[in-house]
Image 1 (tube, helix red, strand yellow):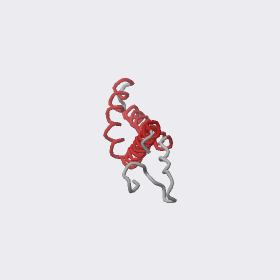
Image 2: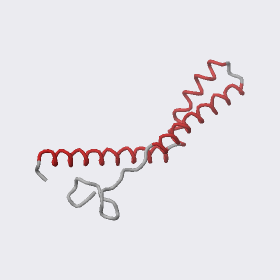
Image 3: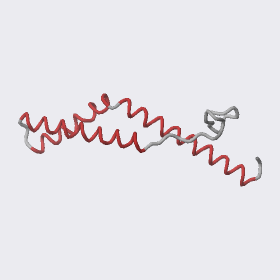
Image 4: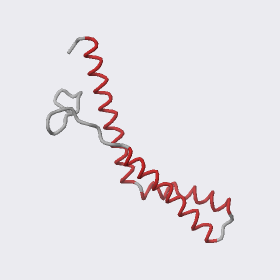
Length: 102
């Protein structure tokens, strides 16, 4: 954050641009779907019937995804938090400009 504590600053001193969310969101979503599909397929190959394999595969994919996708989940959370800070700063800036108390 900048010295005044409200507006994030870039290394060049201007207003910081928030990080992109879409690449991390896509990577996390594709990872979750891939893990679920792989587990369902493995359970079907082991011999479970359609519905049991689907149910257990989806249930098992939750903790496996939690462990395997931790880095991309953390990056996604950091990006979302940075965008929230930038939006809050822009909102405060707009309010101060509209009220004339710059």
